[in-house]
Amino acid sequence: MTLQATYLHIENLLSKEHINQISSLSLQAVFNDGKLTASNAAREVKHNMQMDMQNQYYMQIQQFILAAMNQCTIFREATFVKNIYPFLLSKYGPGMEYGWHVDSPLMGNMMRTDIAITIFLNDPEEYEGGELELRTPLGDKLYKLPAGHAICYPCTQLHRVRPVTGGERRVAVSWIESMVKNGEQRKILFDLQRIINNLLSNNAREQAGELQQIHSNLLRMWAE
Image (cartoon, rainbow, N blue to C red; front, side):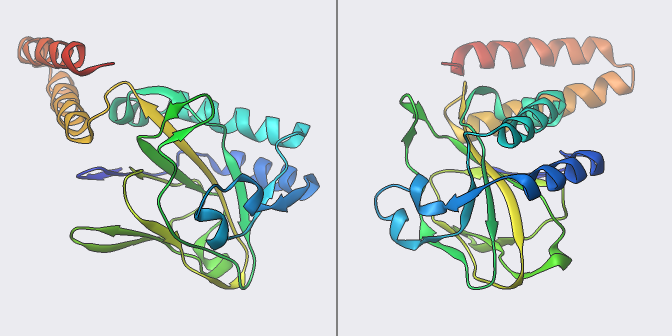
């Protein structure tokens, strides 16, 4: 796991067993043009295929992913999940891409989108191109992670999926509304929790308790 500013890389969010199950179910599912779920200008630059959400295979995969997220302590401590948008299960073949765009600020039943998450469902060796590219004040960042790994990043940033030139890229993508709207505040709380956990692992319970009180009071102050 690495966290740089507001970027959270979670290793092995999904197990190899889950990846294999998802791959098997995906072979049986129907995929539609990804433009059907895009809005505004994003529709013009979106060129991928997405699993039909109205079928049993999609529902099984959704449950696999949600269960894994719920069991991931680091994910919970970093994001403070309030709501999660239903995952979009996408695949990109040769020539497909998702051009530069910004995610919609509100989705579904007026859910605010604070954090985007991309979970990679197959290994980078299985396709060429297809990097997730984020435009940041410090320059562009590229992510092409192993199967089961995930990257969380702020929805405020311009980003794209580079063209796939060979093989097939498979991902699960969603958006999170956090109880703590401000990204810097989430980072402070996450850093505090890491220190608390380290103190507890070294049996420094009194110091951990003092910091836990600060963490709790800040969360009470910032949570919506």
